[in-house]
Structures are given as structure tokens and as C-alpha cells.
Image 1: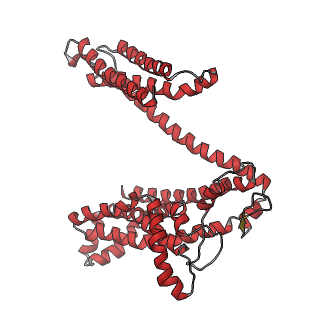
Image 2: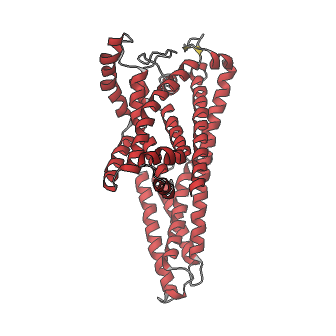
Image 3: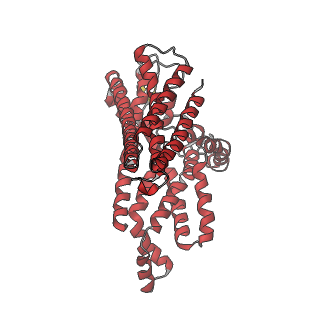
Length: 401
């Protein structure tokens, strides 16, 4: 019996438990629902939720229990019988609790709160697990490779036969260079689009323009990468790099930066638009009442008031740009170097993380473990940017709520 049918069976038990629980509550008071402490729907939801929790908990925990009991060869039919049986038993126990005075609403809300707390703990545990895995593997890397060479060397030359030079500076330079170009593209376009949508566009135009801009956020990054490889790169090479004598490659920092900037425009425009709209209308009215023009009001009143939130939006967009991989792989190449020429091929930290973990690799070698050190460094950088952005946005929201 496949996993799909087991899940479908649990959902069927949940649906039946809801209907029977609701009906049992109504029958307990002979149809006069005014005598019930909670509405019949809460009795049904209590039974359904309890059955669902029991069934899915058994389905999730069964592999660990089977491994402990050394019964991993058990058939799927028995697994389905155990899981569905526990779900039915939970529903039956819920039915025995249902009567006129049963506080079904209170119990249902406690169960929901418990599920929400569990989901929060899972999210926190996942984050902690990711950080610990990076820290432990990075510590093993630094036991084999000097941290001074990793953070201060300007050469990146991994060699699985030994004598590798694993300096992060060329990768960090490429990451920051490409991200800076992306922000130079995205911030002006996104901010001006946000100003137009919030201050000048009619509701009808805004209802069309904003969704169209946000479509850019839904395009897969591999599509952006192909666009960089097939269109933007050759165009920059033929019309700018070669005529100016700056290079002959279609893969370059400029190619990846421009396409990445297009990708993160919605991050800047949507967040900035929401932030500008949150500025109290009374500030605009006061400025216009004193004789200022709409453009002067935007420049001298609205933007200064929204500046903390806009800065937060830019920092969040920067975090998104720093972590991008596919656009860099197809648009900027894989050459680890430190150069000011934007038409030269370079690479980023994320690209090298993928390359070091791809193929038949030895996870005890520093050439593989360096990927975790790179990941930890990138995690710290993006975490710092996100903390700064969230702090600024929170301060802004507290000011205008």
C-alpha cells in the first residue's frame, strides 16, 4: 500500500470523525444545540483534529520505532493498519468525551495551540540543526586547513591530490561585486516604480502594474540564467566589451549583475511600495496645505519618513542577491579572481559550494569540507544583513502603527 493511499485513509478517518462528532453532539442534547457548551462544529473539529494528529504522528514516528525494534521489513499493509487504527482509536476516544457540558471549543483551541507550538519548535530545531551541521563540519575543516590562509589568501586553487589553496577572498570579491551591480540596477528601478505606484498611479493602473512587476519574482532562477547566457551575455560582449577592448567572453560580472538586478526588482518595488503607503496621509496633506508641490512632498516628506523601511527592503534584496547561484553559474562563469573589469568572468561563494560538493568527493578531505566553511561564512553575512533589515523595518513599523 503506497504512502498516498495511507494518507488518503487518514484523511477519510478525519472527515468521518468530524461528521460523527458533530452529529453525536447534536444527539446528546436531542437537537437543542442551545444546551451545548460549545457549538456542534467544535465537537466535530475536536474529534477530527485528534484523529488527524494521532494518524500523522504515527506515520511520521513509525520509521524511527521500526528501526529501534529492528522490524524495518514490515509490510506497508501492516503499517497502514497500525496508522489508521491509531487514528480511529483517537477518534473513538474523542467521541466518548462528547456530551452537553464538554468544553469542545476550549479543547480544540488547546490542540491547535499545541500544533502551532510544535511547528514553531520544528522551525527552530531545523535552523539550529543547519547551523550546527555547518559549525561542526567547518571546525573539522579548520583542523585540517589554517584559518589564516582561508580568510586572507587571494588564491583559490582546490586540488584533491593535496597542496590546495583555498582562499575565500576571490569568491567573496565576486559575490560582493555581482551583488553590488545587481543592487545598482534593482534599487533605482524598484524604488521609482514604487513611488509611481503609490503616489502617481490611479487605482486601476496600480492594479495592473504591480502584479506585472511581481511576476518577475515568480520566474525560476534557471530561466534567468538561460536569459543571461543566451541573450544578455552575447549582447554585452558584442556591443560593449569587444568594442571597448575589455574582454571577449559572454560570461561576466556585468551579465550576472544585470540579470540578477532584474530578478530582485520585485523585492525592492513591492516592499518599498507597501512602506511608502504606510506613511500617514496627514503628512502629505500637511505638506500640500503649506504650498508644496506633489514632487516636493514626495522628496521632502514621504521619502524621509519611509527611508528606514526602504533601507530594510534594500538589505533584504541584497541578502537575496548574495545567495543566488544559477544566474551566476550561467552568467558569470566559474573563474575565481579579483579584478575590477566588470566584463571579466568571475564566480561567487555559492557557485563554489556547489562545485566542491558535486561528483565523487571525499567528505574527509579539506577540499570538500571547505564547502561548509564557505556556507558558514555566507550564512553569517546574510544573517547579519537580515538582522539589520528586520531591525530597521521593525523600528519603522513601530513608528507608524
